[in-house]
Amino acid sequence: MFLVSFPLETEATARRRILSLCQDNARVLVETVRKLALMTDSMVDKQNEKAKQQYKEIQGMGEQSAKMRSNILEQVASLGLFLMNREDFLRLIFRLSEIMDTVEGVAFRLASTLERKITLESKFMKGISELTGVILEEATKMRETLMSLTFNPSKALEMAASVEEAERRIDATYRELDLEILTSKTSVPALLVLKDIVERLEKTADLIIDALDQIRVLAVSS
Image (tube, rainbow, N blue to C red; front, side, top):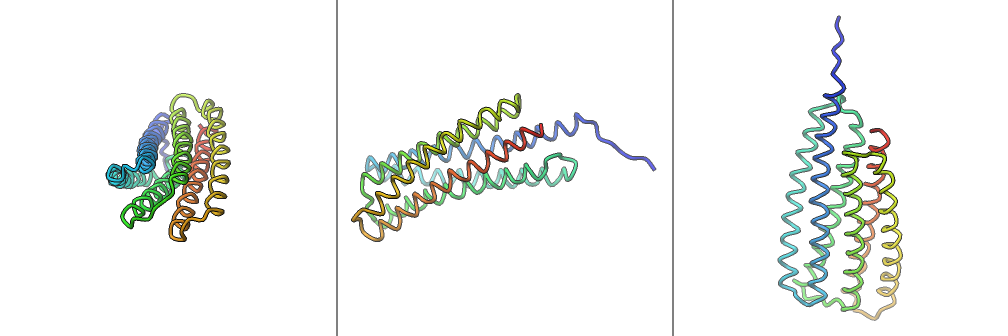
């Protein structure tokens, strides 16, 4: 009976291919968060039609991301146990998917306020815009950390600290905005929508940190 062994280079090539696919998916995710930031800016500036168009673009990016996720899962499944860190890659893929779904949820609720003519006070929209801007920074740094796995896994561990710094700023911004909303005299429908939006944004930030943890695992095992 002969045992078949695969050359190390073959497994390494497969790992690089899956990593590249994850990096591409993260790129689409960051562009989606960027589009959400632009959408909130448009709403702050009362450019509602522009915001509606940006929401449609976010929907398109969501569909693109879903197709990419399916492709990555098929690639991982085809490699089976041959791919080292298979479970770690799967966790990262699903975490990126969760982030995308949450971002789409925020965009949907913002778009719904325009369709239903629910007025969100300017000061709250500015707060949401600021919060989204910091989340974009966090997501961008997360993707940069993921990209660094290709050429310097050790650097990825160093870069992760900058993502956590953005997370601390997000927490501070979220707490202040949440308190302002709770103590405001805004209408109940607007209050509920605002609470939902900021909580989803805060969840997005937490999910990005979860994705960062998976990137750390991949860095350590490289």
